[in-house]
Amino acid sequence: MKSVEELTALFRRRGRKVTAQRQCIFGVLQGDLSHPTAESVHEAARAEMETISLKTVYQTLNELAAMGEVAVLDLGTGTSRFDPNLESVHHHLVCRSCGKVRDLHADFSNVTVPTGSDEGFEVGGAEVVFRGLCGDCRQRGRRPLRPLAHGATRHRALQTHRRAQQEIQK
Amino acid sequence: MKSVEELTALFRRRGRKVTAQRQCIFGVLQGDLSHPTAESVHEAARAEMETISLKTVYQTLNELAAMGEVAVLDLGTGTSRFDPNLESVHHHLVCRSCGKVRDLHADFSNVTVPTGSDEGFEVGGAEVVFRGLCGDCRQRGRRPLRPLAHGATRHRALQTHRRAQQEIQK
DNA sequence: GATGATATCACCAATGATTGTTGATTGACA
DNA sequence: TGTCAATCAACAATCATTGGTGATATCATC
Image 1: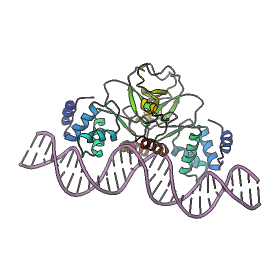
Image 2: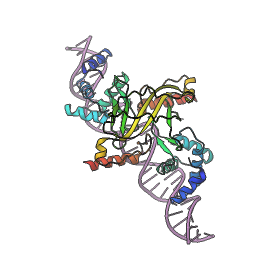
Image 3: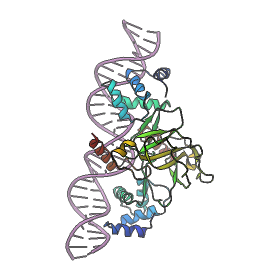
């Protein structure tokens, strides 16, 4: 993504004000390769600014998304994740247990809809999502919470389950 | 998916009772290739059973999912969709405007994580999601609501927008 | 056919992620 | 320096989904 300075200039150009909170969030996103959730951006920002509110984080992230400076991913993990890496086309590795997301830089341009199978769709792009267990969860012996494709993580049972495992972890 | 009779037997074997509601839902799913949402299953079921409740539909769909008879998909469209087609491995075409999902039977077994890029993940499977505009939305001149990958459809603004378009459509 | 365990109903409350509202205060920038 | 946007805290609302209630209905079994 763009540097803090570039984003600052961009915001000014668009008539938005550049506050300390916003710069703090820019900074947090800058080095982040972990596809943070709004919540984790908030936590990181609070390390620098005690009082920054979750609301402000959401607002700024949405502004960045609207300006096309970050991507918003809904990969079926129950929460949106923000991806500051827009420079290169990439795909994702998603942990079935903790929902962690990693970039995967690989060329899948050969992955296309076979002719005649497009069902009348005007196909824009392809996303490849690999699901599995991340290193951390493997070591901890965590079991996948989502057995099936794009498992429905919004289901309360699974969310409860995930929270329970996070508690155990402490 | 299994026939109504097979599901009936299966439910009995598991100590579950087979009610008229459940058989109604089995029947609805039977011929459905559209990856219905719980809501649309409910509507279809109500055509046959006036009084069937959304709660019962959710419950039965979840039981079917727990028994591995249907798959639950969260493809970033804001609502879970249920896929009765488990016989063959397949991927999906998702409409960026209305959220409609179509099966795509294609072999992407050559789509794998390049060696050395697995980031410590124990990779289970790959899903390929093609996004675009379905035939209906193209004809209606609908614009995509989700410009980016797995666009965050849980955002209120987009949900409102989608409802608005559905209203217009009537 | 009687019995007991489940399902279902209607209704209402809760969940979690996200957004809206309000009113007061702070801070950016021309 | 004045103005308008941004922020705050606090609280309510949203949507899809699940939980709880108590009453009624119905399945499976004897």
